[in-house]
Length: 110
Image (cartoon, rainbow, N blue to C red; front, side, top):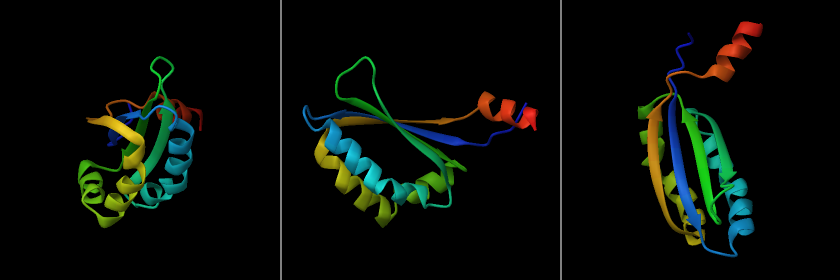
């Protein structure tokens, strides 16, 4: 069993109708703000297959403290300002990864 120590953040965002492609473009253009943070270990943007205009942003962090520090940073405030006009509402869920089977399997193959 691998000890992942990953803190995962999942945002669910409802995007204004007709703004989805522009939101995707802007998210991608500002993704480096998150990715350049040393505590960030990965991020993903997914579009719901079931709900129109719903997107999920997942990001993994070395630990909760690293994420919270980024969350309070000026860089994050600017990042949010660029994405905010596209969303009508959203929610955030945080979690501690217990198992990462993809990583465990990759490590076992080495």
